[in-house]
Image (cartoon, rainbow, N blue to C red; front, side):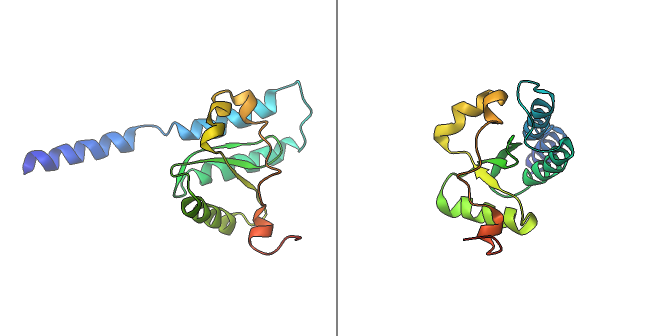
Length: 140
């Protein structure tokens, strides 16, 4: 019994000490957007700093495997479980925290796109429903 408790304690310590690789996607996307000189920024650089904080906070939500910033101002979310019920719950949580933001879920079919940060940040969030519309505070 003592061995099991010791192993569980050691596993907990290792898990807590391991850095979250997911946070790196928020950092990498922000840095890529701000330093990519081939295109004009659609927003002020300060807006991407705010989106960076939203991105980092999104990582702590349930059913979020990874998240990154989109050049058009959305937050891309790679769900842990990719089904309607799970993503609806995540979207509701996201919109409660960020009522004016836009969350764009990345589907299984889009996963190859996000292997390259250059292509990932250019995914459009136009097809995503804004939180303002989800919460009933946006235009129809």
